[in-house]
Length: 106
Image 1 (cartoon, rainbow, N blue to C red):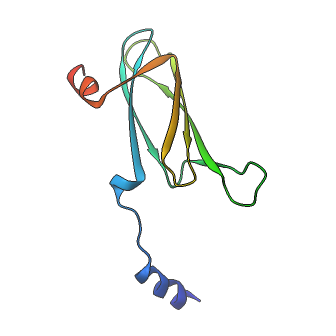
Image 2 (image 1 turned 180 degrees about the vertical axis):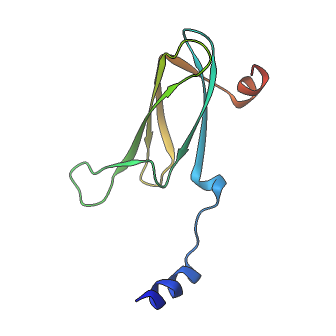
């Protein structure tokens, strides 16, 4: 059995780090601290079956807490389509910022 598994690994392609990772940048509403969140779209998403045998979509909930000032939780709710593409994002306790804004204000 291990031979078959090894053989199949030769022909299977795994997504690269860039394809697996989604980075989101946020800023705390209370203290202004900027945080970066990483979501592995192949292992951290929960399936939403919507009454079928196969996932119709996926979702992920992340709670971020800074370490510098206020420790207020920032909640992210992310929705993905069946192909693991981000289709909706919601935030409470903070706001989304761009990567440039995140890097310029650190």
